[in-house]
Image (tube, rainbow, N blue to C red; front, side, top):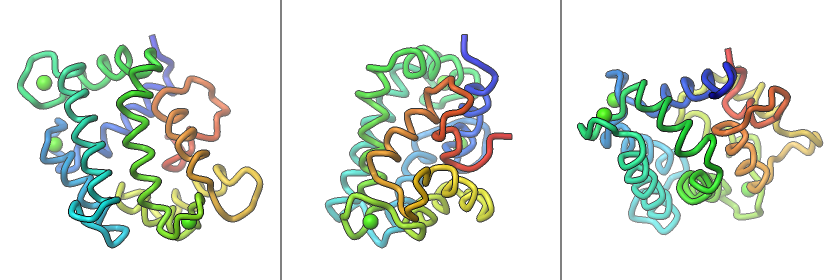
Length: 183
Ligand SMILES: [Ca+2]
Ligand SMILES: [Ca+2]
Ligand SMILES: [Ca+2]
């Protein structure tokens, strides 16, 4: 069983991934999101960092299909998403680290355009806009995640925040705020 908070975070993530809004996640959604993220940083699947994102997304998609797509139609329904995410990644940390974490590392690595190991507020905002996060929520997320008030977020902290967002049960975890408040 997962908590109500974890369910709401998974619902938010489903909304991010059903890019065309037709009620299921499919490959086209997935590649559209990867393309949007790479474009947000002036890259494409042909550049090395862009290719790293696309490759991590392809690997994660194959893992989602094998773990979540129970009826084998190569689409992930909301029911398949919630049940499969819970068993394959939320309660199975190794599954998360092997399949989800490389995608998070690739995305935040791409977003760190000057390669100083940190995301500026602008770099963070560009990442968020690829997920269609409203501007006020981007602001709220940044403030919550920037715990030392330095005005930057480290890539490694963001990778940890992503794990808290996708897996974590703790209500007070900063990572719950990765995409702004969870309604
Ligand atoms: Ca869809
Ligand atoms: Ca399915
Ligand atoms: Ca940077």
